[in-house]
Image 1 (tube, rainbow, N blue to C red):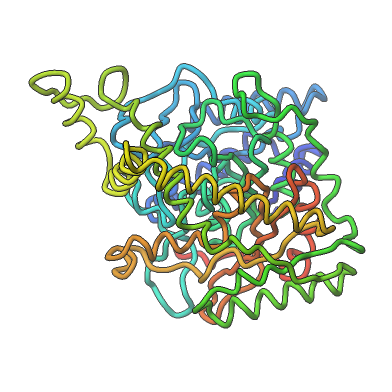
Image 2 (cartoon, rainbow, N blue to C red):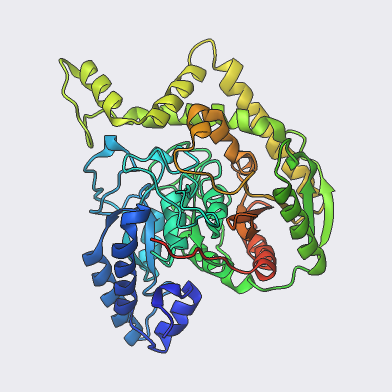
Length: 493
């Protein structure tokens, strides 16, 4: 039998249906993989073996009764940003020490209702602030990928680095993730996995620890486009507990995977040809366009003139909202408390000890741009730029373009504790150059593995879609997957 941890989610469903293996056997195989590999990769911050086996046994019972759900028996990893009832939920931060919610996030509740099994909580950048998964209180995640002929530890991307690394290393069949400025798509591109950021409002944000409320969106990371579509169908829903969730029917995403893209119009934005972009990224982009031509799609050049303002505007809006959202962590009601002489002293000492360096940096930037005298000059202006970015996309889609093809990242994965990145935070922020526009405009975007660089490391292409047209993205993304094939790291851990 194939190693159970190598099966895709689609294959798991088929195998369980004909009783090639049980949900419990599958779960035990993944728990063994975690036990053997997590020490090297640091992808999980909490493993829940008892809960996983209990959920798997319940799945086996439902399968026997003919009551299997969409994700029956599928073992998943959950990003530490999602609240899971009675289980470690700390957003990768010291300030939430010991926090175990008494409630379940809507997205994870949807997954459990469809029969999925929880293996544990996945590492992430603290409060989802980072592009390398090095800001976590639990230490950096190490990518399962290594450059050819090198033993240097590489980052898996961030903030959903634990999710991407666990999926790529076969430590879960799929994972939940979140994307505020690229935190699903960038790690997916770095690890040879598929990651989709849905349209803002497609998935409920209720029970997900907030970073920037107008930008955050949950989505899946998986090994194949079809697996991502299956997860997305379960995760998406209307939710009365989240006023920003969209009251729209969730399409049958898996059904569109593999359909023809003949007649689709794919846009290539000229503004994404950024200065200093490596030749191999440019070449991969051209190759992607050729794959679509060969599949019968029409390739057109488009213009998104306000793209150059997206990154600076994002790094005003996101820290401003973070400053507001993170004000609630004060040592009074839950998590870490450092005693002080009075309540103000306690607040200050708790926040100083509880937040990491990157979170403090962004809270301070956010507090500054929201302060009297600077609000209009920074935050208000950034919101106006955001409107212009959104309008750029609207004009392109109104002209008949169905999806936009871009690189997912400006390079392949870099090293853990890279000195250049550590010395200059702006270099780290530039990793989001191709992804932040999608969040600013509230659009769906998917990253798909498209090839390997000269060192044998994964590179991804990104497709940006019309609002709520995730189905169109899944259909188009399959063309890249079929042309490029799938990629898995050589096991060293």
